[in-house]
Amino acid sequence: MMRVDYGMLEQLIGDSQALDRAIAGEDLSYKDGLELMNYDNLHLLGAVADARRKELVGDTVTFAASYYMNYTNVCTASCQMCAFYRKDGAEDAYTLTPQEIEQRVGIAKQMGATEVHIVGGFHPKLPLEYYEDMMKIIKKNHPQLNIKALTAAEIFYLSKLTKNSTKEILSRLKDAGLDSMPGGGAELFHPEIRKKIVRGKCTGQEWLDVIEEAHNMGIKSNVTMLYGHIEKPEHIVDHLIKIRDLQKKTNGFITLIPLKFSLDNTELEQEHLVNNECSSVYDLRVIALSRLMLANYLNNISVYWVAYGKKLAQVALSNGGSDLVGTAFSEEIYRAAGKATSSSVDELATMVKEIGRTPAQRNTHFGILKNF
Ligand code: SF4
Image (cartoon, rainbow, N blue to C red; front, top):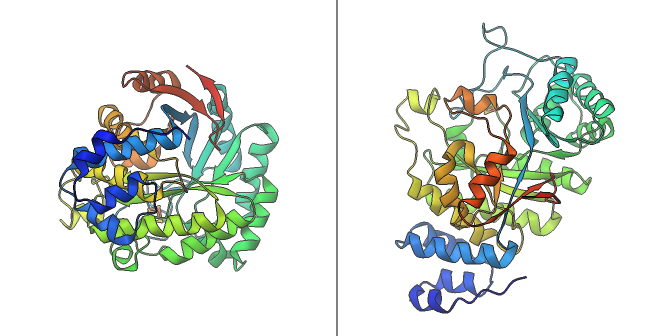
């Protein structure tokens, strides 16, 4: 680990015990987290997070060549923060067959994808065999691709639908080719806020229980945090502490992806519960806090440039972020909420070089595949 000289920062920090502890490499408490969510000097907070980033993972900014795919937009849930779902039978509802999925994956592989990120709604009629067939046909034709598929929330739903245990579902999917899992569906774990932003989805604790089972079976996963809607600072801090606690037990999380809430076409917008997306200043605070709260346990903090745009993503990388997610060849969920979602590995490398850092393409598990 590279030791950073904190001399100047230590002088500036003054009486912030939380930042003192962060610099000393100690675990931050719930109270520390709250202090930093309300800390008025955002520049200093970002500078400490950036220094910790340098110390923990160096100057390389990684990114994976991912193909994002949504196999269906049919969903029995109706989350207030979601613009993507359709009811079964709706005019613009769709479900891809395993063969259609494999064809798309084949094209993505030709474009350079090394992993496929496959998620969808809670479809009430798809049997477990559909998912097994999906994994098998991809694995058979593209054995070198990492299949990162189905969130813990989807696994939980499938378990209820098919009356199999979540362990049984995970085990069958792993046998069929599942390599890793995306971090979606985590949203915010705290029940007080979760019930206001999701409807018909598992609880935060159920999400954590499923992902713990997956980790214990050797299936590593990402984890997300949906922020910038109607949460309070304590919900963010609670979420990060729960991630850290589980990571101490399983070491199964690969990276944290803070996800900025996207306003357009969601029920939260239509009911005027959220009228504006959160400020860039808040985005940077969340990235910095994520770095400091998870330091020493989960040192990959991903910046989801699709939601930020490239310029803000560059600033986020200077406030604690160390990874860009991702090379999204397609990403219907954010497109449904009005965001452009296409980039290439070379564009991401340029974005990193522009801020004086070192770009590197990685695989799913943060092994370096290519330097630029
Ligand atoms: S967030 Fe997921 S579970 Fe909720 S409505 Fe949208 S697709 Fe369905």
